[in-house]
Length: 341
Ligand code: KG4
Ligand code: ZN
Image (cartoon, rainbow, N blue to C red; front, side):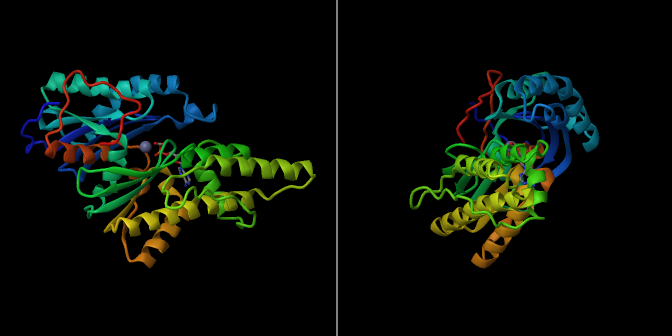
């Protein structure tokens, strides 16, 4: 990776295609979002109850050029105004990532621009920077369909994963529980809505794991939900779906928030950040706000458009990477299991 002077890389065209959103954005100086275009594929994946990788890649190919052009148009800029091209290099679905990486390489090559590779999770974390400056040391709770992580950031550009899921990601657990309850994909918003109408009256397990561990596990909880529904129906009883949703959500939020508070204390952080699609959850937002208020800790939860996958967050992360001179050459490849940097 070449290191070159990058003080001028202010206006960045960023691309994100790691899962089922084809996204491009123009971000200036890491914080000003001049455009943020997202073409969602949810409708195409809905009937399969989840993201089908092959379909995702095809949609990205169809949408990518239009989405990039739209990002330039909405920002009212041309390629002449762009200082660098940034792209998610991983983690994610390899076929999906490849479309974005190749589009970014083609654009950078054709326009003679530097190419900045970005880690998807770094993008989710720096999405918070679009709202307000991150104060270090910081702790980020990343909750999405593919990730559940607690990340400690001692200073800008430095990340340490201190906890992660050992099985299902939290969004994945939401999607599976939703399917069991007969709710549509993606299940998170539907379970969230239903939970607000029910009582957390059904006893659900909480996977605390070993003393002091910041790891998570949601597969036991998901199985408990399925078993409770099954046992009830065998006895000819029915459980209120709203109570099941509220009880499941209660367990998820209890574990997420308790571990986040414990980590924030142990690492003596200044600022707690929440990111990823599940950060849209109303119950989680309310409980994190209450807990951080009690701890007297600064908290940022980005608005929904910056929580779910988008390219503005990749532009925000790329600005930091650019300041450090991080640059890729034309050999850049998609890396579906890229470690966090
Ligand atoms: O970050 P994201 O858009 O994509 C990934 O990178 O995975 O997250 C999508 C996930 C899905 O599993 C969806 O069910 C979940 O976020 N989600 C929610 C809510 N809105 C979306 N989960 C719980 N409550 C919500 N309100
Ligand atoms: Zn994501």
